[in-house]
Length: 450
Image 1 (cartoon, rainbow, N blue to C red):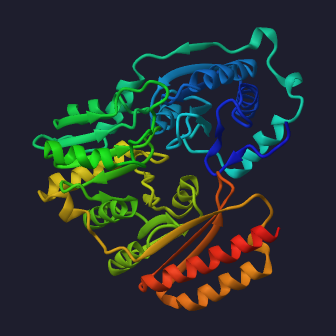
Image 2 (cartoon, one colour; image 1 turned 90 degrees about the vertical axis):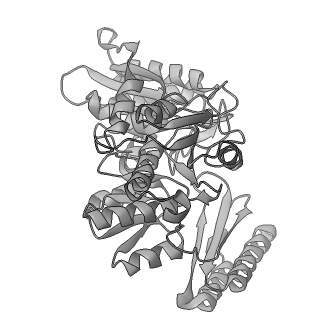
Image 3 (cartoon, rainbow, N blue to C red; image 1 turned 120 degrees about the vertical axis):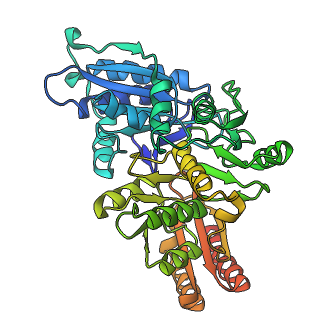
């Protein structure tokens, strides 16, 4: 069973296939439970999931492993990932577990782990847990009289809704706004429409009938076409698209145009900077964010800090350098004044706050910069390390020289698939396309030769 389990965002894969089997889920529960026992109190875990069919299997397997390690398990049912992170702290749990493959199709699933502080685990802790998975840990499990218990917890949806509402000023109401919210048939299908309605909005909720198979299926933040159509149909002021576990968001303006994570970060950063709330003199994002965002922030004398891809790396940098706005182009927005991880609903509420304060439509508020032409292509590989091959290195160096200071080049292996991602951006779209195609061709030739 030996292998690498953790990727860029926990453990993820096809359900009932390595590494997302019931056996491994149980062993992850055992290893995580043993890793987070502190003191002599009864140890507790909060465990949430999204709406995919395999959640039942993974949930029960993890409960078995956690109880075997002596942990009491509080079962939350379908609930957003950021709600799990919040409830770890609210319920004084020792660890949080979210069973979800985020924006992936229903046939995938994953396990995300949070520490007692509500933050995703560091690489070091994940490596320690991973090292335990292939060892005989049964000898260190709880005695018969120290086994954990599991119980369903009521009222967790209400707790999260109240938490989300409190991120807005008490005096702010969303009355007068017609909002379409696409819940991706996922974890937020109950809480997101309810929170928006309680704040005073007229809410049109779509994709709120999960059946185990339709999570993210042609809906949500990765497939916003249906939301765009509905915004037009009902003449809404704004559309909000969440993904399967509601930790990312994409906005659609009143004209049906998509507003990605870079523009959302720009909007929130500008608003918070003007009000004196923005901390650390900048924003944290990844190497994938558009150069236009960096230039927009620079015009306000703010810095864009870049990290490798993965919202937990964004959060780590925010914590280390005292910044409170960060995120990814894909829509993971982290506002550390409120949350320890990406929260699609809370991020959307900050956009709505900008609309209410300024009394202007989304289309005017959300176009903060003109994106620099950007092109991303994926090259599927069968194995090996093509980025270490001399011809590929030479092609990359040549591309960097051709782009110069007027562009950027990002080439990286995917953390979840056997792909090499090649991204370039610059003011000359023809040059951007040329350098990406050249690198893709060399990687493909190297792969074929291997």
